[in-house]
Length: 346
Image (tube, rainbow, N blue to C red; front, side):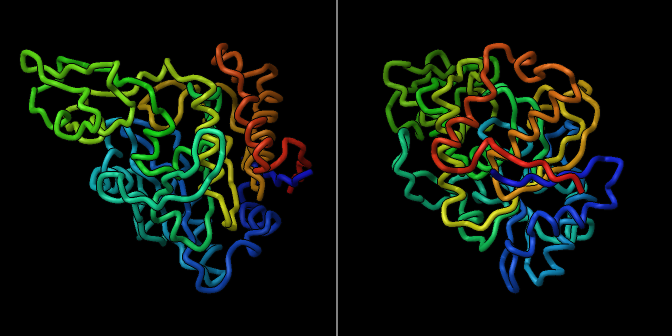
């Protein structure tokens, strides 16, 4: 049984105590380079964990003589976080600066998302995975997660932050492999860059518009990576339990041989994740903050608290076709943690 530590949003003065009880001092040692992995929020999103909370994590890492930096990896859709230049700019717009947070920003997978280190995984779908370089090279990892709903597995918590967020942009395509990109031909300029980068020869230009041969397409996503016009994208509704397994296997590889602390924020919990610009409000009232060494236990506790406050199975209601327990069971099967936990209220 794993311990998950909890404070509610009426007791934010206890945040430092939460980190100490959860064992931050067992993760961070003197001179450790510490990656604080978070989500800087997409343009138009307002749910991301705010800089003032991240600054508190930075402060406690520095108190332990660690050397922290803030980080996230680039996205597979064309938006404000699809390359390092845009990504750093939107982070600063949302208040994540050295001045505000006390730590620099390093985009984990480089300029275009293809800076990674291959790590042995040896699981069902992947023998090796592509971990974003900065996360691999960091001595210690702290995952600061805004807990939300998510179309892939019903909810997005620590496991999603590690698996999807810890993958390089090229690694993210592996998670979605075999999904043929969706084409919005109205955005296509016929430039042909996607044709150049397609390793399978599945793309050609017909009447100045992109065309993909689905029989040849291998789902690698290189075309999306190099398209600057948002013509190509992932069709999220086609995702299956196989993608959930791949997500968890990526999380397994990212965490391999690492000392890690997980912090989940249960506030402004929305149906969709912080990659979405939305004006929708939260699905339940603010609950609190959790911390644990166990990514499975902290996500299990997060779901249970949301359901308790919402007085219903919130994520199953939001996404009837998704079993939110699936990713937890698969992660537990891989030995990443346990669904059995003790909630310790600070």
